[in-house]
Image (cartoon, rainbow, N blue to C red; front, side):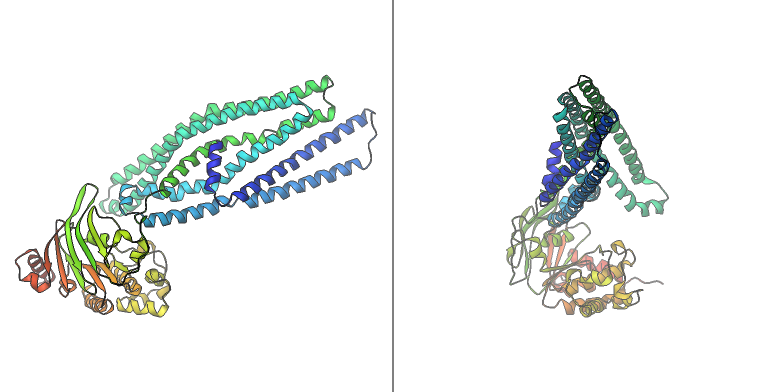
Length: 582
């Protein structure tokens, strides 16, 4: 338990001074809590002695006691206020920093990391699990540290006046600590199981939500629904089983403290009867017996949660220590912007997708990449942007191996338009400005006009200030793609990668976008993946990729003169694009 408290304090680095000051405030607040009890016991003893005729009471005594108690109560609230002010927000502040740190980590890992790790696991770590630390960590540290501070202060008071009673209380606290250790060990065993059940539930919920369109369209529950139901049942069963495992230790914890309270009164009463303890001090100990263990009783909840936080901290440390894809990279400023592959082979896991690929895309030229689905076209573009690292060979940009760059310095030179466009839940203008945050509204409008999306943006309820639904759900596929093109145009990077950039654009606007792209990307190095002839026939070179190999290479006219894959591709595309209704 104290090990977990230490880990939380190390996690809250940068806030340790505030935590220590909070403990100091808690210490003084505890003395201010004990003070009125001691004062009330003393005053009650004086009144009893006065009633027995042993002593005359001063008329000012009640007012003096009342004023002292009021002053101690005010001091208690003062120290409690500052303890809360210093400590309560630490969890929230540190969790916000941790989320941003992890966001930076995830931005710098290989995309292969997300294929090897379940999305529900990553989501749970960033949300549910980190929320446990955010909401509970400081409360649990406060419960343990300040709880034992309070017991130590009151035990010290009792020990001064009645050592046997203090010894009984100390034995009760020791047995309670043993039970709390049992709770902690039980929780340490069950926390990973609960953690995995929570991750499975998160993953099943994500899959269920993503699969709802398919479920609805086929009118079936489907395996995703079954997996979600199974995850809910398993999570419930595991948590109930875990709770039953804590019952014996919880009972031992509470019984030991209750027995210690009774022992405290009995021993203090015995000392009073034999004349070893005066009446006021007996009354003080009797009053303390009702409150002395209140702070320790609540620690059993902390023991449960602290082991859970241990599991959370393990997961966060694992994420935080994930290898960056650019951990050995450095800032490189390019003076040229050609792209070259030299004997590149790459695979996702054990399945190799590219085999000994070699080509050069000279600066300021357009290189079109064509080929059947699954041939490796998008993989080539992903390797240029260093979303993954090659298994063998070299990918170079501007004469530098991309593995020598930091991700930021490499991607600063690249604009990308993906086949599957993702837009953020933000205004249209901010989505276009994503690659160039400092752009003016006029520059945004100019880019939108060039990408043929100004007219439909102007027709939206709030124009460029219209907030797009999550993932761009409020726009059509073609509209999203044109906004993505505007975003790439505005960034104005020297290297442009277009992955099926016009796939969802209607024929009426396609030639306009082609003109805009040609004009606005003049002088840039362009890699474009496309199936439409209008997109590729004017390229400076065309790479034909088939089964991970570059099987043909040349201009449109050169490849048409050959009886190869490209010529067959063109003939098929002409037939597909030339169809009409009779």
